[in-house]
Amino acid sequence: PTRARHSLRAEELSMIFGGVRAVSGLSFDAQPGRVTSLIGPNGAGKSTVLNMLSGFYTPTLGRCVLQDRALQGQGAWRAARSGVARSYQTSQLFGSLSVLDNVALALPRGRLGALLGRRAVSSPAARERALSLLRWCGYQGDTGIKAAGLAHVDRRLVEIARALATDPEVLLLDEPAAGLSREDKLQLGALLRRIADAGIGVLLVEHDMALVMDVSDHIVVLDAGQLLARGTPAEIQQNADVRRAYLGE
Ligand code: ADP
Ligand code: MG
Image (cartoon, rainbow, N blue to C red; front, side):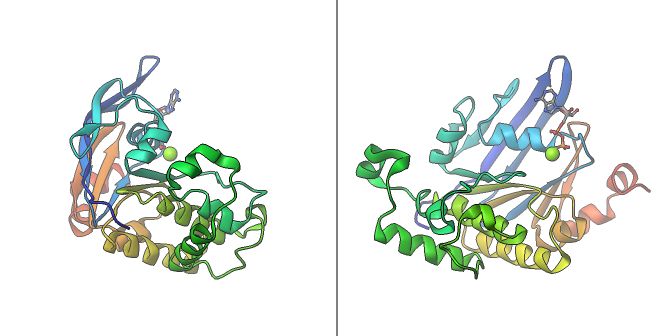
């Protein structure tokens, strides 16, 4: 990890889908070295916010800013180059490539690598770096197997290693704990903390409240596309609006 890191800021973000307001005037930031969680009921607009922050959607109003540069309308690939990496709800690994190559090919490759494009085989240096990233993320398995054959938790770890290979300023995760066992969730939570402690901003969308309360420095609560509350885990757990609207009290 080398680059200087900055907050990723959502500034007055709104997204309207065919007359339906999915997100309304939402502002918050994900700071370097911190885990920021975005929570809220189904349909609250969480994935839409991640899609705007990672360049998949252009906001109807407002903008996404990283180090005073607007990311708006750049597209996902440029967002990744600008320092915003993302892991997905459904796996985006190349199933027929090895675990090692999935990570090695995501590393910045300089001008020659760019010329050779995606078909390039990874260099020995890239393979070494990929291996150390995989181990750092807690992947203990065989790095030579095809990604298609990975067990669920290993798939998550490899996806995160691949996202980290781009040397991001901010890592966005959409429900990474879905389908994981309690034990696997603890391992994932520890990894997210380690990533933040390495100076990267982590923006987590997650349903598992135990995990969110455990790993977050800051929580942003969305309800029907609008900011309902924000604060530390302790503040959010005590917030009367949140308890009423979200925790069902
Ligand atoms: P969450 O991730 O919090 O469950 P979403 O961001 O997926 O919520 O959805 C927020 C609202 O926006 C929902 O009402 C959903 O139906 C709507 N929505 C999301 N994506 C689209 C889309 N591509 N086209 C139309 N409506 C969408
Ligand atoms: Mg979602």
